[in-house]
Image (tube, rainbow, N blue to C red; front, side, top):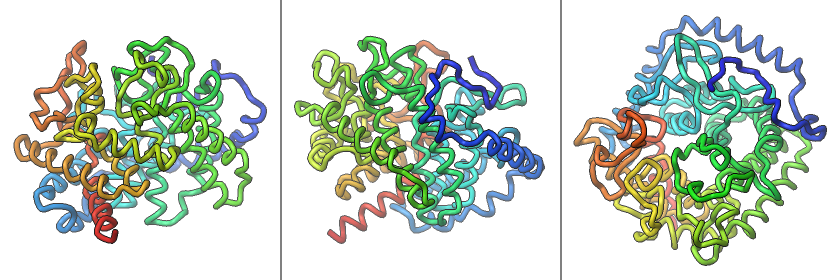
Length: 454
């Protein structure tokens, strides 16, 4: 059920004195609420039009390959067309996932982080506003809700379910180019979200989980993915959730140190989790990472893209990263398709042209390339971006739009299916949340530059 109460506490989460000590003082929350309510009152009268003038699209004239630029200009305009006026709880005009989203209007999830990363090169201020909007609905218990929906003139959301916490990467990208004035607010939100994950998503033994394994609510963002089809329900470590929380610990350690905070526990927890990921979630047989329940059981083991996350977030050893890149992401028998990367390996018998079971999602290809570049595989990052952008531009020339996901073999997006049990069984058109083509072109440029230097 979707709720409308923005600060509802999940009473199913156990209390913890040590973790609660890291939470924000309730008096601080009252101040924040007052600030946000005043800000909403100030900006609610704004129209979204002025933002178009701030979008520096002249940068696109020399970014990437010429064949991509018409598509990127379209996406820049789509960012503007997707803006809606500020309304509670949003402090600023908010950018919806895309006007073509079948369940829209909606905001949030990892989609808005991809959108902020995409627009950062053109308008850092707009990227910042969306990152702030993403944090404003954080609850007292630390939960950052997944998607927020516009329904009957109000913004509503699920007060129990979260989503992949990749937003610190977007904040760090912003601070790398604009400075650290965002740091204190981001750090406070991060500490509170870590607290929520520790209380509500700790796995049995070690690691963290998403609720997909319990009730198929797709908290992981990978709706109807293959990993949980044969899994025994339970609070077991998921490779993606564990990797994402590892990244949160690392960011908390880095940001807290910059602010003069005691970050000993964050660094210690990151080290412990990294050791667990390296020693318990990696398969020497596949050269890939897997969920705890399947890593040593070939019958349960899946070759789905989520196994890349330890490499992407920097939790893998150099040797493990090499195998993830060379044996998997760049392997034309596994993930390196005509339009990379496939969401499930082409060698996996469960591969099919359906949503997250095979088709290529540009946002995930972008994450894969970010990981490759960070681990020293600039050529792989450039190849992933170039091939994905070439195929996206080909479909843009044919259809005049960008798509939620794509045919991995270079076919038409209309020929893959979304969710057969729903009325919406084709990928959405005009979908921004998984189409960060401007950020992809920028990453391609940076990867090529590193390749040329080496």
